[in-house]
View 1 (cartoon, one colour):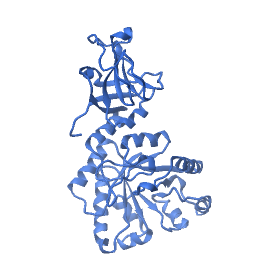
View 2: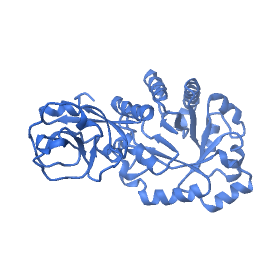
View 3: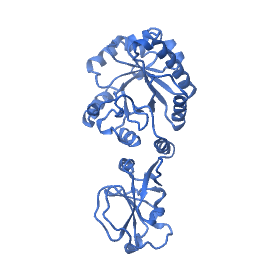
View 4: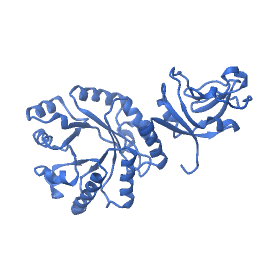
Length: 353
């Protein structure tokens, strides 16, 4: 499942409501928010949660709320009165901050409970079983990390997830957004340190490759084109990339393609490109081919003339291969995920993306 974050440090305005509606329409299914409340904003947070819950219900979105027992009580709610929260549209609670396993087990009878993935121990699992927790309602949620140096390593993440899955937990992790980054650091909110400042869709695909069941955008926004790329992947299984033009033959590479089933190590090969009727392609810009270069085989390659490729690994120049464009740096991480039979689309870069 895919989700996104809404922060309640300010009243929900039309821009926020529009973003929620847009994300729901693109295929996202859940919202994450936090109820760690400043002392002077208790009443504000209660109203904001009510407004957020209402909008979540209207869009058929799940709503996971990060809480402490004190925070709930401050806002006039209680773990002992879960129906009030459910009526608001809350479908789950992320429970941490010294809430007992007995309480967690009790809540799991009525709501989904997400536990801190990094701190779950075998002892916790034994206690939850002892208190008859509903494990079908328990999920393991990793944190996001605002500071540059503090994200998880891939190795540690995978090792922890293996432990969690062996105990039947579904795993959730955050990927960064690329708009409305969270103050005060504005460094993105990923779970993995290697995902910081990386393309959100590339991070999402990476999480999928590690069998993470729930993937949420940590930051408060995504750029319009990023959303378009994600929608294309969700709804059509097409990965769109933007490219800059190098030669006049660039127009031949624009549009939708499909990588060959026999996925090459160094290049992505458009399966049908060389079978299309095109004018003779004379040798032009037969330069070195760095990662992200888009090439067309010229007439010196005989029957291969017209084959379109995207370079995955740096290659030497070839007098039979024209370099006609290059995937922009922002989209280059997506190349990794254009595997065997994957559909992809090359679009011309626009300055206002």
